[in-house]
Image 1 (spheres, chains in turn purple, cyan):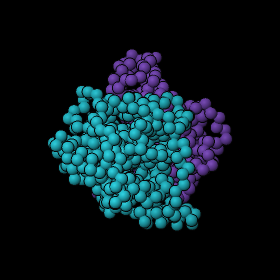
Image 2 (cartoon, helix red, strand yellow):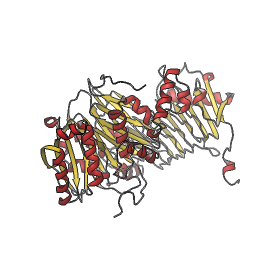
Image 3 (spheres, one colour):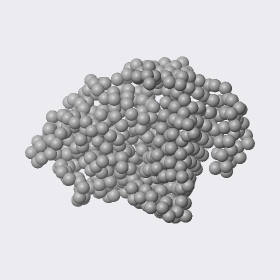
Image 4 (tube, one colour):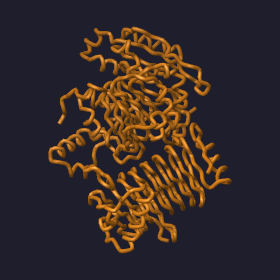
Length: 245
Length: 370
């Protein structure tokens, strides 16, 4: 394990140190992180980084297999265009997490901001998954093309909604699972509730269990039957706007 | 060099603010550290601060901060000033040499009181009189810019990174109960000293990250009421909208906010009949004051602070609280760098303001419009 103290270090110097450190150790610990961008960008398999503090925007951008565990909260654009790997956030998360994410998993203990999972996509064996313990802001899964978003809605107050407005607007692939569902007026025009299948339930069980393990929580009260699933009404709603291919 | 309005340079910005609602004052060190952490969001072509509570010894006088391009325009402007105001004190705003801050204009500060007989003759109050004089100078005195005109508050801004501008103006030597800050990544236009944020009018100051798509509609609206947008930048118009809605039209802050970031029509349709009527009236009467486009703004004023996002949150904004202090910033790390363990951290929703009144200032009831 190599420990790097990030206090007052510019993001370029910090990322250079991480690049250098992974040549000799696959386990890295970063302390006193505060706003440095792009940590974990492009890093590949078998590398594990524990991050203490508040990593900056675009953490794990283009990440390709590494595992990041953040003891703190994440800012905007976490896992931007991430390919593979895993991120565990012991806190909350800003806007646009999972922006154009193509594979891998994100687990967020608390809530997430606006436009989470915007334009997520899947390809063959690559299927991105975002699991959120709390609620999400507006435009969850906007233009979503693949993968899955799971919201557990844990610990919400009476007035809090599990999603904001315009959930799944422009969605044309993938699935959104919301514990207890969301209000019809919060759902975009391009998606609708569909029936949970047995394979959905298995999938949910697996990820709820993983969430409980990562955050050391007892989730026996969370019943997979209470999830509602939302999927796209049309697989290719914009084809008439462009050349057919 | 091409000036504002002649060239378009697209990009983003950083904002930050700290307020102590008890009115306890603290130096500019924290706000400089907070905005400096977001260095990457700026590009050195604009930075600035607004500070409230800094001039207690002159709290009843208007503090005019003015940039002059040359001595000739300074003399001409001072002639105008002394005709309209009693000048209690005048002098350079003290600055420190900072290598990266170049091409500074002449930077002067005047503590003034409107000449009573002129105010009385014009049936104006002091605020309206001062506002008109500020607009007159900014419009007609080429090479002179009044960039701050409130009481017991001041704006400090220029071309440079915000942390360098803060150092340049020696903000570590001022104590304020509210600080706001801006780092500019010139949105669409090149930087110049007058065009840096905050934009102020009387006690109102605005720092802004974003772009106002409705600028022309808003500009036409405020210009009908005697304002003049002279700074070639969209943020200026937000300052005038707040001044118009709150100071002139007497709207409470909360209602002014529902004008600027009005709820969508389908949301209004789901409200109670009473609220529906009120919101519909506000959207109808003030349709030209609706701000469209991506923004996060922080408004400073004599009674406190408001932070606000556009209705669909196209710019980031995080808030936190610790004891009597409230923090807002474009990034959570800029709060944590000066307040590592806040009592509470949250992301305000689009159109949902963070309003902090100074103790005893929020209770004052104003006649409500609806």
